[in-house]
Amino acid sequence: MLFFSNKYRMLWFFAVLILFLINCILICFYTPMIPDQHWAQKIFYFHVPSAWIAFLSYFIVMITAILFLYTNHKHWDNVSLAAAEIGTLFTAIVLITGPIWAHPVWGKAWSWEPRLTTTLILFLIYIGYFMIRSFGGNPEKVSRVASVLGIIAFVDVPIIYFAVDMWSSEFQSHPPRTVVAESSSDIQLYFLYSFFTFICLYVLMLNYRTHVIKLSEKYQRYDI
Amino acid sequence: MLITLLIHEFKINFRTKEALFSMLSFGIVLMVSFVLSFQISENKILFFLPGFFWITVLFVSVLGINRMFSHELSFCAITLLTSGPVNRGLIFFSKTIIGTVYLVVVEIALLGCIWFFFHISFFNQVYLFFGLLLIGNFSIMVTSVFISGLTLSSKMSNVLVPLLVFPLLSPVIISLTKSTLGILQNSPFSEIQVWVLLVLTYFVLFTLLGYGLFDYLTEE
Image (cartoon, rainbow over all chains, first blue to last red; front, side, top):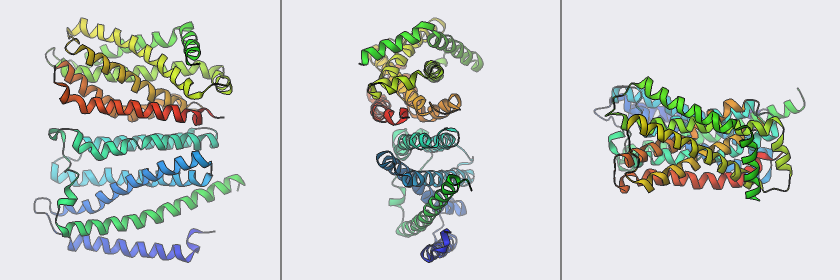
């Protein structure tokens, strides 16, 4: 069965599309301009929600990996793989949008500061995760091994989150964790709206990808 | 049972001495290469040395772990071992302990070289320094053995081990480097405690995860 042949999924897709269009319009024309950053600052309405979604996705990888090891039900492994793929995609977006903002504001695209470095490390761990998935050997064993790796890879997420507190301020370029909470209510509102849009997109992507993985597995089983 | 497994590990590794000697010689060569290629003056070497030292230990641990597991793989010994009535968590512990002992031997040789070539003393806060060394070694080995178990059945395990171990251990290496530098500069413990705690957290977390999950990794 095709994913979009279900009318609710189709509706969900159009809802996400409209939400995203509104989000782009709000970010471009309505969000307040920060004087010393101008347009570069607007990318934060994509950058921060992408980071949150990536962390959420890795959390889902960990939970579904535990469920897979506990129940041995293949569905959880498919969700785990889909979440890992989407999480890595959003981490890549974070690593791309960060330098786009940093170039005009810091004067250089990349800085070896704690949060950026630990995010890059997380990205590299997941590259290893996909290599295990691709070259691991026996598929059943690969699923088990990848689940274990999905659990331990989550260790890096709290380190990224608390990186701004752990390293002394001389090494920091990122704003503190409370920056969104301390910003004006206008900015907070647009941030929350953007985050809500990204959540809706994420749910759609996760469902879609899980569906595709399940189908491809089915076709492989019947050697189609 | 742990003692029996430790004797078994010690015997198969000591028979050829391959792992220990390759770790030892590789460690010294690497350390010398680092120092030579960076051309650092003696008064600045203190700031670079902790990083060089822990990166060398990381490389050496990956090499050693590859050698240790290669024996098990070539004769399918790991399958025989795990099919016996043995707690698999204890197999994980025995490999970690032997690996840590080897790392300690390599580190003693490396510290001797550092003392001889750079006249740097490690006796400022001797208990703290050796305590850190021990926790650091355990953390590195626990993670390396765990990842080796993870990639055991893979065709590309030689590539996958460093590919996973290096990023996973980078928070530990950063913490160990920071705390070693603090100790060498005689800083108070309060300045380095966050880094020592991070290493301890990693050590406890990976020991528990390794013990609990090694069963799933070696299951056929």
